[in-house]
Length: 299
Image (cartoon, rainbow, N blue to C red; front, side):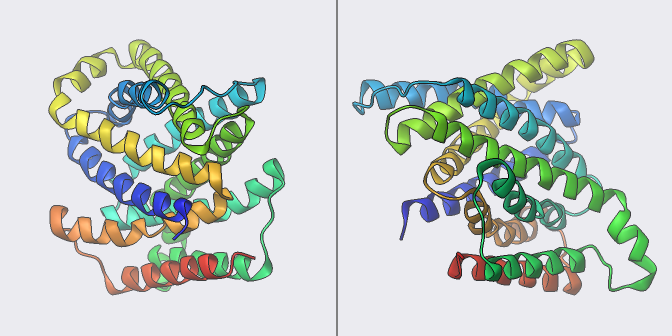
């Protein structure tokens, strides 16, 4: 099995674990506070990862170009906003469905990959994207006529789709950043991109919270026993994503990563005890089918 597939699967599992941990903080922190918990505790571990690869792994530091900083900064800001929207979504819809709404990011990633990075996709792969979209429509409750407007244009759908679009932009930014580095293997490229982005995100969010929600910084530190695991899971998951982005088309990486939907259903049932309806399960099945088709027919 290819390294990028293994990295994507591991990243999807760790990302879902992080979401579960973050949801447990939602009652104790604001939306931005929960989002900040992911970055502030991940940054030191990301820096240590780069140091370990250089000092003990024998890797040389790649050269950082202006394009690297541009792509990484765009990706970092997009991910902050996307994560905040996703955390806000948790309080509007159950956990598994909240994750599913954000999965429209695969569609957005296809479009942005073509426009920004010039990476196209075949017709069969686009068909798979439509199957995935059908699954998202089902999960919005559209088959029930009375929910037509609320399902498609209600707050959960709009927030989830916006989150997905921004996650797609972040994915393109991170792939562009890693590919813009000069020299080095895929591990050090992924690690260096991760370390820069995480430090950048921590700085931005710290400044924002200091101005808008100063009490949240102290509150985040007050829940460090849980938040530190959010940071570790987030850092390891992001490292998996960054490895995969360095090696493969971002749209395919995110398609494989949608196996996270299976993990989210299991997490909802095992830990949060949230019920998934038959309609939602049908939507998840369609999304999973689209993912499989995307992987089998890379186009």
